[in-house]
Image (tube, rainbow, N blue to C red; front, top):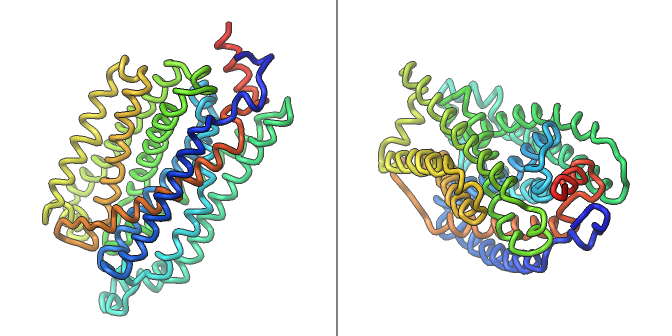
Length: 396
């Protein structure tokens, strides 16, 4: 494949993408029915499971947008080959906007601060009156998604224009991405405070948002590695994805594994040093009742083992071996989200079947939407300067 002979049809997703889309939609619909049943049958477990699923799949959408903006700022072949994967993932944000509505309409089932008895605590009453209340949650939810979907819309629209119009400047991508990364970092930090940290309203952490930012970026890279491994078995990706780009993706995975660990350890160290009752409440919940085992499991299998394996250059250049490791890390990201959310509702370790139903429902719909987006355009942006340089460098 050369730049002189490349056409739109040459770069469209292979038929396997439609097959996965159909299968994902079926799984999503079955999972959605099971989730609705769970909302009535195991109500005490449903809403925390729903929030866990929502935050994981939202993180995949937002992490993809953040990595896309990083690519527009720094460039490189590593991003050129997964640019359309990232764009397709971030354009699932309208689905996530809709999926938040059940949480919004059932705040008292998740958040103690939204219940009348919470007002008996003067500290919580003050927080409720000033910040954590239905109107505040509603308007901030609208603002968060307006910002996220607005940035995603323009990045996606300009990218589509590059398929049909040659010679377009990339300056607007860089301009939006520069301010966009700042907007994303601030907005997701506040969203995490609203939706996750406030599960234990008396507890605060100034580094909590950064833990989610690192985790979302890690999830996005792992997801791209898995999808590119599937697509690389067939044209067109089999013709342009090389071990160099795969190795770069492995290095990014290693970077964000270390960054996620650094933020988590920093939070623990700062709170341990302070040793204040309100500050340690989060860790007390997660070191008792069986949750301490989950914490050790995450330390071993989201950090130690992936870190050791990702130091291997041969593994990072083997797309299928890297995809298997990425799949494991994705599973650990689910466990990590479960660890952040579930102990707030269940002091003793608790795992319900409805969690699997929720993940199947949300995940199936998310994946179907993703592959619908992916199949609508070529896998490489046809007239983007980065694409042309990338293809030319491969044939020098």
